[in-house]
Length: 452
Image 1 (cartoon, helix red, strand yellow):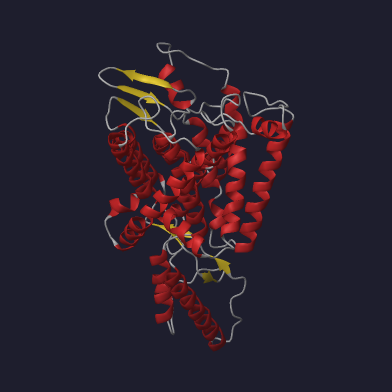
Image 2 (cartoon, rainbow, N blue to C red):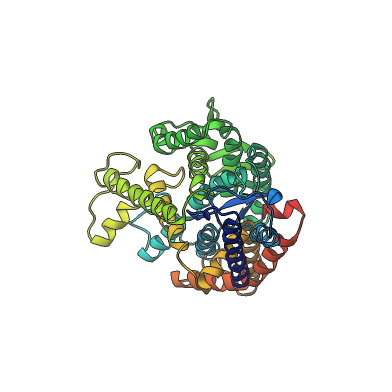
């Protein structure tokens, strides 16, 4: 939230507590205890919590000095965001920018999956590693957002299936059109990548949420922890079931005609991740104390990382390619964390979701200008995602036309640090447009804008 908004909300919250105490004394009953942090979602957008009693106050039935209460509720509705969630999303957006700058301006050094330790530099390896946090975080938070949508703080629970279906379909269409064109400037080949995977995951979740809440979590656990058992399955084009296999577990061309369609992001593991995100939603319920939520996030994050160290350390399960001791300590560490992303192995997901949970807990306790900047980027994720891709496309075409190629047919940077420098400039350039759009998004009543 903008600092001014946070101050206004905080003032209203204090007024609410004072009003509640006054009413309690007037009625000669004990004031409410056990203050909790409310966190929910309205119209697809996160509601930032206010300090409430364990039993939510019904504003329509409130008697006495209710003007302050109405103002506080309205202020909470307008804020609409959970700060820590937006901060985490903003962080991974910045890391995503770094990776996309690499793919646009450092493509002469193509990165395999898993990475080839014999050909890749250490700087490029760890630069690529930072981007691994992005997709699992986006998908997990999509599931969390679906739960928040289904359990708004100031209204009764509502079924999320229709919301998930519409948003998932929107993301699939966006991937095929705007996003695909932003990468190549044509539609010769349609690559189904991360936005497609998130869209299909949400479409799947729209059906899964019809199950009992605990079954949703069970489905997520079974998929995330069990999909590596399907790794030996491999189909070739033309075989029965190839298209479904390519979409769920493999990567390959699923249509070859006037144009080609290639599934680049196997979807099945992401369906498990989005289900676990939904299952984690009650951590942000009105009845969950903030300190308890932080403890849960940190404990689960540390536990997942400890599990990774055990199953990876002994090469038990979770990654097709075992690690082994290398010629130096750094190379050994690189081999240990060199996981498969397409599809994401269990070890890959443990490595990325564990720090994501810990970061969620940390962001709840931080407040600085950097945090506010991250929060801004995270409040309009799809807008900045599409915008930065087109800025990179246009910038690359202009540089290639004016400077000319310097690496075969490509224009490319010579050093990895240049990737980070350009990504920082890109983030600065998009800060103000994102700020303007985020303000417009908060104020507008146009429903389609909320998708961005």
